[in-house]
Amino acid sequence: MTKKIAVLAGDGIGPEIVAEAVKVLNAFKQDGLDIELEYGLIGGAAYDETGSPLPEETLQMAKQADAILLGAVGGYKWESLDISVRPEKGLLGIRSQLNLFANLRPALLYPQLADASTLKPEVVSGLDLMIVRELTGGIYFGQPRGIRILENGEKEGYNTLVYRESEINRIGRVAFDIARKRQSRVCSVDKANVLECTELWRETMTALSKDYADVELSHMYVDNAAMQLVRAPKQFDVMVTTNMFGDILSDCASMLTGSIGMLPSASLDENGKGMYEPIHGSAPDIAGQNIANPLATILSAAMMLRYTLDQPAFADRIESAVSKVLDQGLRTADIFSAGMTRVTTAEMGDAVVAAL
Ligand SMILES: NC(=O)C1=CN([C@@H]2O[C@H](COP(=O)(O)OP(=O)(O)OC[C@H]3O[C@@H](n4cnc5c(N)ncnc54)[C@H](O)[C@@H]3O)[C@@H](O)[C@H]2O)C=CC1
Ligand SMILES: CC(C)CC(=O)C(=O)O
Ligand SMILES: [Mg+2]
Image 1 (cartoon, rainbow, N blue to C red):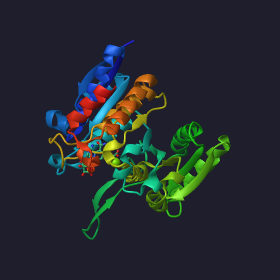
Image 2: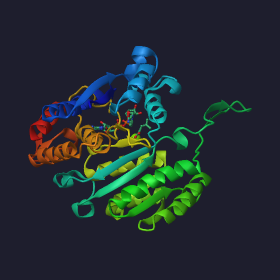
Image 3: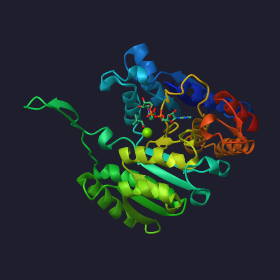
Image 4: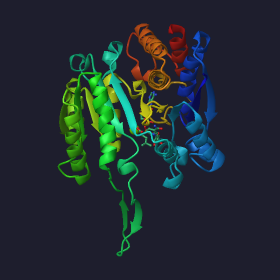
């Protein structure tokens, strides 16, 4: 049966990088991949057109689709808008409305990019870690929130960090289940020394680990985890953490692999339906220049084929093609080094299609 994919390109470099992932998906149609792409608006592009960063039409399209491919949202143009209608709210909205609570962010070093990593080759070679980030709770969603005027006339900004045991358990299970298919090690990252909410996170992960006696559980405070990621990242197999900590740690981990333009992600609900997007944002500083790295988005399409569309052979072909173009020495600006061939966003996409 034809699988419907909602394509939400968004803002900034979003349309440029999504176009390359779409080229790759369309190339598989001749080999029997039965997909139909539908296009919708999200983020600033949607706000400009409809007054909402997540129009009802887009939400319905996403709900009815089998999977969603997203570029990125946001940009300078919308920075002065009220926060309630900013492009980023469209992204948080779709994640929350579709219950996409499990964000998988693999950080994998392609050996061809060892010289692009910020770390020494011996520290980073063979790096393959999985960050499991809780995506629909935590401080990005907690109530109450806002900016209020105190009695003395001073303004006070406030947000709330909230997690229920059930939310911690369900993301914990995702992490433990993934670890079983890897090296059976989970590091839960929190700030349980000062935040009660993450004290509950730690207690709940520890209790859950009784169901996973074959998986080793360790705990680490987030400040140490950030340091350990850049000191000795290969000590980690699976890291599981809250929405905000996972957001920050995954950007940090991306540079170990050479560039934030290399890291894909899957955001899954309880039934495996998912939205697939690069971990980076809309990169307004390089938008419209045809220089952004499309590989994170192309690799997100591979994750979609593997996790939601149950087409692992096509996913393997994308991942091998990415490796092949790197073997050929093709590099976008962010991963360029001496002796390599510099290519544009579109040239990189074309090269991946040719290598499929
Ligand atoms: N998932 C999403 O849609 C996200 C949206 N954002 C939004 O994106 C906008 C820009 O945010 P920033 O903090 O600048 O983060 P960013 O991730 O967009 O960019 C950070 C830096 O990385 C570079 N970069 C990002 N992706 C790249 C790629 N594919 N190829 C080459 N270089 C790349 C950018 O040029 C920039 O120098 C903001 O409006 C922010 O809210 C930020 C993160 C995620
Ligand atoms: C709107 C932000 C929470 C997006 C982001 O930075 C991310 O999901 O990585
Ligand atoms: Mg982020």
